[in-house]
Image 1: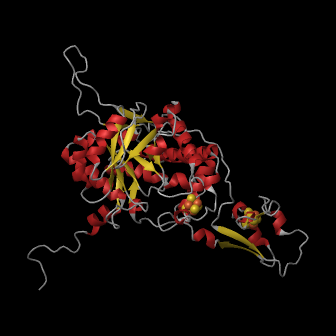
Image 2: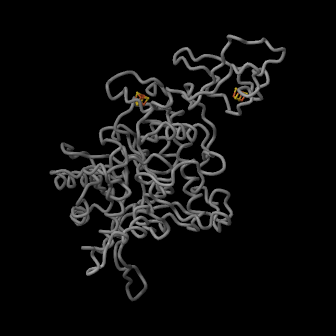
Image 3: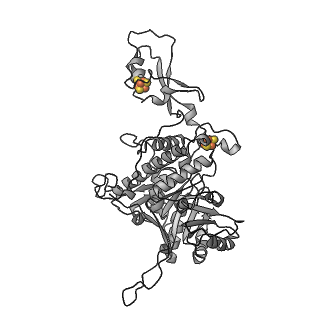
Length: 464
Ligand code: SF4
Ligand code: SF4
């Protein structure tokens, strides 16, 4: 298998004791002092290696326990109990749930796909991406097996404008200039999260990860300019109003502008400063955004970044999810006949590996991840840093190499899950997955199909 389709991972330990969902409560009162205590029979030696993390007041048995319940069941006085950890349950919010955060920690630590056992115990539908199911008709006998390499699956995507058709001269030569394209081997880019206790070392770690993965990291322009030229090809400077012309930088492959009242002035400055770069325009994902996209395309911005909110909703309608926004924009561009001239990338609230595949099915070409790469560094989404308070896991003290390895592990685990989904769907090209809504089911569509006609009464058959 070509090496670009494999992300090598290796375990990278946590720096702090993680908060786990359940804890062990072992009472001492009433203990019979049995000759062989059930605590000594734990096959994982949890009680033997027990220690206390003094900084966080976390007991190591809480996160080393494998939940086999042997000690709970065998203590004759029933002095050992397992209980839900209240510190776990208050992490994050309704979108960045404790389970989501714990799953991201696991993937960043191990680089592996989380396995939760046989069967799925949760509800069958929910908000946002949870109301969408993918067609896994080939899951039992996949014809493609990207992870184990029987037949590789390409996850490469192209960023930029692809020509509608190719024109050749009579001699068989190409008769037009092919617009520049940027190829990335995974449909995942990264960007600086809106908050986080990050410093230069953290950002350096993410830059190292972007280089290793051969993908792109979107950073404010003033941060990008601090990095040497050879690194710049993996960075996307984000430019807002007030950016001044600078000496041309020909290494940068993509630059991002923010859609605001001065976007047309900024585009001139960006073109001068980054003459070789494809220009991307960042739009808030809101109603009517599809009306402005052709203007940006005509002005020379073939990459459109649709930015949702961090809770996975669109910017102006809390009841609309980015999945709906991406579908709407994709469909509008298809109807205008300009979809293939545009690359759509989506961001905002992408919290699980499945969201990558689902965003692409809805019509995005690629996604940009922000908070997952912060949670990879043990972030608990407590948002203390937003208020200027100290970070409980001291992310700003982390070494850049540790940051890079944790980020690579996360991206490796997500990449493998994308391969799993594509293999189970029988799709061998990430480019082919784009807009494949026929390979997915949407709860709201099914509900409409099944029940939409129930309350409709044919004309002339109304009850008096
Ligand atoms: S529940 Fe099992 S793994 Fe956990 S401490 Fe008891 S015996 Fe050990
Ligand atoms: S753990 Fe809390 S303080 Fe630290 S980066 Fe995350 S949200 Fe900010």
